[in-house]
Image (tube, rainbow, N blue to C red; front, side):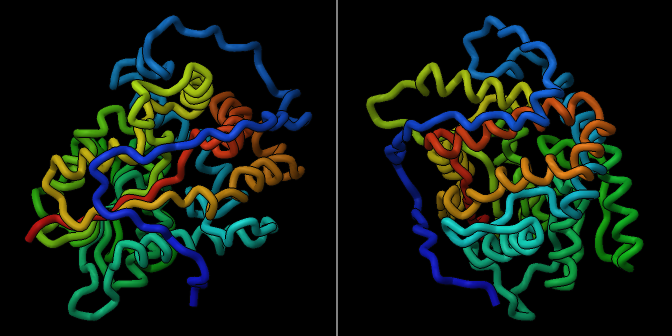
Length: 346
């Protein structure tokens, strides 16, 4: 049984942004092994947007995301396994690499617990969509846990192919399936899924409103929606935008990970409300994921990780070089690891 010795500090529907506080501190230095891989600095784009990806068309962004995960997913699976998301840890815990796969499974369980997903035979989800499914780790887990039919979508053909192969190897081909599709134009009819699951895919969505609308559309009446995603801090009532240094830090991260503009948890709440979704809850789980990025960096510095990184290609190396920026964002209170859950009216 998972520990419940922490306080989620869930927030019911929030009509106004929460005050976010930025903490100052030293910027994490790039490990010397990774500095050897660094390419010349990318020229700064002259744009009023906070990210370089704002200058890309939607088609270019989709292509970049697909190629990034086509290239990097094999490396990730080789080092970390089939769950391509943060782990959930006890605050201030020192975790070894062997603990991290357990923490990733715990992340799934804590998200389900926070959303109040029932395990009762009559109420448990029978149909699940995994939006941004990676190589299908969450889908296979949920199919086994609930005996549900799961369908996953990803922009990466490599991920979809590997996810289906893993499902077949585990005897789950009849329960789970995966295909290449856009989360903003999902290939499903209205009201199909009891559980709509998005584990760290929302940050890739260039149109957050359309993303939320699609999640709501494919949810069955009374169905649960779970969004776990990276956000920037909520703005204070007196603020019109993030500070220049915050925008620049996010721009660098976006350039590495093929992300469009970020939004805050408060922005997401407004979008969920505008889609008439009910029982909206949010929480900031940043303190529970703090060990994750340092652990990813340590895994990259093992011989296996380092040689695999070199073989993976330029896009993956560029993403590796941005990992210290994620740590900086968390430490300074700019980046928030958010969970949002809600229910579609019956």
